[in-house]
Each structure stands twice: as C-alpha cells, then as structure tokens.
Amino acid sequence: MPLLILLLINAAVSAVAFTALWLVGLRLKDVSFVDAWWGPSMALLAWSTLVQSGVTPHGALLTGLCTAWAVRLGGYLLWRWRKQGPDRRYVTMMHHAQTVRGWSFAKASALLVFALQYLLAFVVALPVQLGQPMAAPLGPLAVAGTALAVIGIGFESLGDWQLLRFKADPANAGKVLDTGLWRYTRHPNYFGDACVWWGLYLIAAETGLGAWTLPAPILITVLLTRWSGVPTVEGRMRRKRPDYEAYVARTSSFVPWWPKKA
Image 1: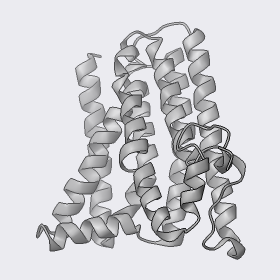
Image 2: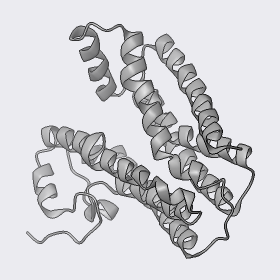
Image 3: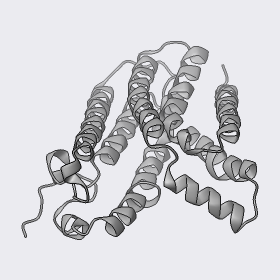
C-alpha cells in the first residue's frame, strides 16, 4: 500500500475517534478525560498501520510496546479522572476561551483540546507508523530501543505508583515527595514517557524509513519539558508547597541524577 494512503487512512481513523470523544465531551461539558485517550490514540495508529501493512518484526515490536504503554497510561489517567473529576487546567482553559474570546464550548473544546491533541498525537506516533511498512531483520537498534522503552514504561509506572501512595497518606498533605525515584528527578513519570518514545524511535530507525521520524521523540520531549508537562506541574507546586523551592534546588529537573548536597 502506498505510504501516503496508509497515513491518510490512519489520520481518518484517528479523526473519527477524536470526533466521537469530542461529542462525548459536549454531552458531559467536560473535556479533561481526553488525556486518558492520549496514549490509546497512538496505539490505535500503530494497530491501524499493522493491519494495513501486514505484520513485520519491527511492526509487531512497535505495536506491542506502544500498546503496553498506552494501556497502562490510559487506564491510570482514566481512573484519575473518574476519581478526581474535571482537571483544573482544562476548566481554566475553557473558561478563558468562553469569557475572553467569546467562543462557544463546542468551538473551544474542538480547537483547543481535541484537534490539538489529534495533531500532536499523530506526529508523536510517526515512529510506530513509518517504522512498520519496510520489513527488516531485528538488530542492535531494536534491542536498545526495546530496552529503553521497557525501562521507560517501568520508570513511569513506578513514579506514578509512588506518587499515588504518597498522596494517599493524610500525613503527607502539603508536603513534597522526595523519596524513591522522586529523589533523583522531579518528574520520573515524564522522564519515563520520553524514554518510551526515544526507544520506539530507535526501533523504527532500524527500518530506514523510520529514521526520518526523529522530530517525533524530539517533539514529545519538548512537550514534556517545556510546555504541558514540567512547567504546568512546577508552577502549581511552587504556589502550593512552601518546601518545593528547596526540593528544586537539590533535585534534577528531568534526567535522574544524584541529589545536590545542601
């Protein structure tokens, strides 16, 4: 199948899914559940590619790893949304769009949330799309990429679990988590996320065509460290946690490293 046709079909499949969720959001008057679809939307693109291009060694590996990451992350974020309700970030965004820009809820949710995530997910998922059609034997890059992706999934999962345990203890109210993985990086979950996509890129790069998807892991890293990830969390933590500045001073922002001595 021509590559352009494959990508167009993938884009259409993803558009249908995001449109359906947008309609759900209109009914609920809440869009924050879209984060739970972020991972699964990319797994959907991987599976759509696999169905169209047939099973290749790299395709099976990419699809399997992407699905494992997506199910874990999507399930966790869906559980969190059901437990905590609307995310304040999205509530603020929608309120600003409606009151300042004068947009309707439908327009604001479509353009600022669902369409944006649709486009970003498609670009980030390019390695699991372009890394499949060309059959090639598995080699050192695939081994390294698999190891990095598995480490990333484990790192992200453990970081989320440690944070959940910390928040579940009432004695930790107002405190900063600085044990476990959080002793070595302020954002182990985001670091793990980045590792997953750099690992998937390495696997895809071994097929030749997938090597051209380098902008994808760069994009997800920038999103996590410069846009929707680290800046959002740290801005909130600085306002709510008096001890957070001291934690920032001694703890690596992203890549795990030994804490600085006081």
